[in-house]
Image (cartoon, rainbow, N blue to C red; front, top):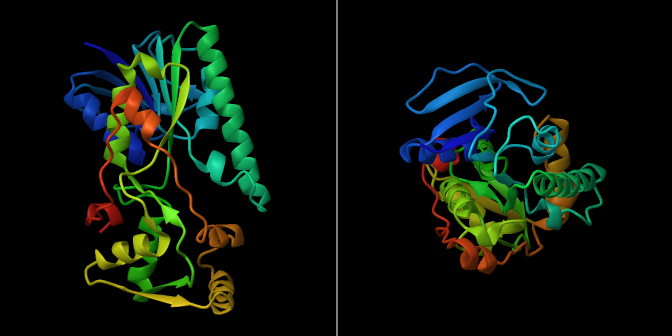
Length: 285
């Protein structure tokens, strides 16, 4: 029986990966901040990166599905030996590097440093590491984009976007990411490489939101406003304690095409993501 250590196991990607590992008869050590009862082949380890109880000395694969910078700091300490490491980063490394927002630029810098640390540490330990960079993640109803949009739309009964929010997006389902993480384990061509993982369909930002709103019960109307009017509405919403996470740079990016090439992932490990289909679970209903 193969063994795996999974960080971020209670997160949206982690849960999907755990289900596949369990079904595949892996012995899994799953890290969680809160204690959880064991289930089938999964043993939960309480703690955070700084202090985790019950870590094994060695596993076949370490998976990281949570924050990459935290994992990188833990991994360089070499506490658990593993010949294979698969870790999730983000395409934000590319999409936010020219952002005017200092926090977003800091995110990019931390992602770059974390990827570098994982690859260098793996090489020093004689291990093989692969980095996976998803685009806009959805499917578990817990993401920071579509699930939040759906929740706000339910609350107020409508949703607004600025006119011209037609930048291309490639939302990717959590189950496709879980399958990708398992697929690269067996693919030697992926050793030492990072891959963008877009979804199987490219569509305009406004169409992505419209489909999300149409999936709600009852469906919610999407309104588009001239940019000056939208910015005024956004300012009022922020004063009311809403939409504070929607920065001006994020609004500007709604017009930008954030499109990534799946060909390398398709070639090296058979990546085949689904088209964008929104169901009740995907929007947290």
